Image (cartoon, rainbow, N blue to C red; front, side, top):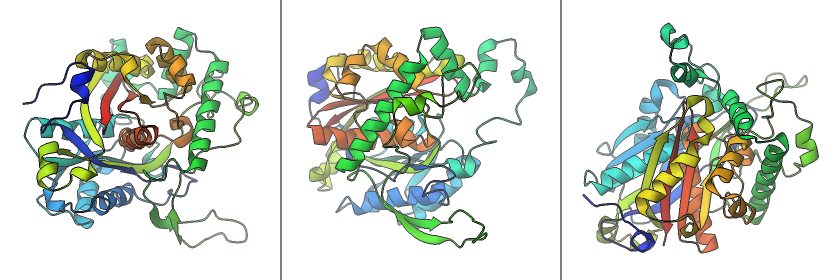
Length: 419
């Protein structure tokens, strides 16, 4: 079993036992209910990124992939049957196994880490960490527990009861407890939209996005009350709002509390999408003649728990844990992708981690985040990895960190290196 590297030199050094990344792709991220992927199935989106992983890695035999982990939060039966069906449908042999992972918002980062751990410990040689979510199809009752042990709803243990707290309420808790003003939240949200719009206009997302050809049912009108489905090809994210201003954000009413500060404009959008990252032991990539496809490597990940009623603070705890384990400093990190579940928790984490200046300099979420792009729960972790790896390449950076808060009170962070 390979030990974790310690120190920045060790993190950057190459070894035959490294867990390397050969591909990291995603679908467009589209608004739930009204976006261009609203009529697509989550497993359909997964099939697109799995097929593209093969197509964009010339010389890769599908049989070389030992296992696939798929982050899923809301899909029926945990998405296991649907995901396995999609895997077989696009050409992977029955010898390639699959499992699904549900760690809420970190599900597909956990999928990437799980595949990485299997490679590191010699259980497999190559695998894919992926994620899928259609919040259009599966949000609502599946996001809020209905049939649950009644004792838990009335548990004497507050932290048990709080696991059922709606995420919007946890956002308000973070804002109130740590002094995150409405103005600070709106400023952060406005900048997320501006950065995402700029990145989109520059074509910065093009290399990481796989087009999706799917059905789309137009909105019914008086003239056409029963519109027929049409075939469309979706090539770009559709939740970005280029015209966002602070004045417009200031007019929005609180979404979760009459006296709160979290609004539809400074919270992540519910979205549909999928993503996948191909990982392999470096020695295996060499033996298969795939060395030229190596983008970088997955180094390590850390998960930590926190109080469920302020789950948004998770990255402020998970990131230091990860960096401490690897023996590196914040200054060694060239790019950060920290999920924007809510502006309240994102602003808090930047302050607590001492990354406010790095954010202003464009080292944190330089292409915007979930407030602008959207947050398809099971796919977000792998989406962030794709954005990170392609972003590091454009910037010629080496070290990057992905992190997010997790419903019920956790945080996760992963460290990656570009080559």
